[in-house]
Amino acid sequence: MNIETAARRLAELGNTTRLQIVRLLVRAGAEGLAIGELQSRLGVPASTLAFHLRGLVSAGLVAQERQGRVVRCRPEYPVIDATLAFVKEHCCTGFDDKQTSATASPTTVRRRTRVA
Image 1 (spheres, rainbow, N blue to C red):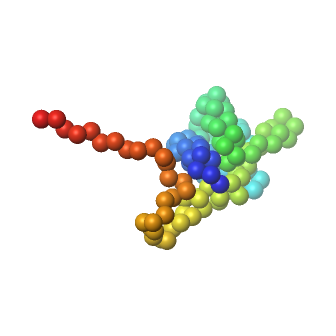
Image 2: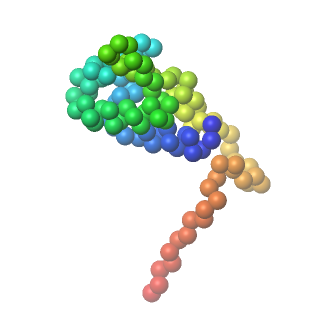
């Protein structure tokens, strides 16, 4: 996974409503929940839920399947697991000062100097 994909997925999870959606779906298991049930459990308007689901689906964190007139949402466990694993990928390995990180940003942080 590249840093841009991870950042996109984590940004989607960084919103309270979207995180609540994913947690509810994970709790529901592989069968997921119908959109109507998600809406009633969260207590959010349909348009708000649709907005948040659109972001989660486009990031690959949630899958939707139409079953007749019902749309069922399911958590994408492999994608969720891979995203969290990316964060912990180099856990506790330390730093090698002679190597630069392949994921480091090429931008330089500039500090303002205070003029007296």
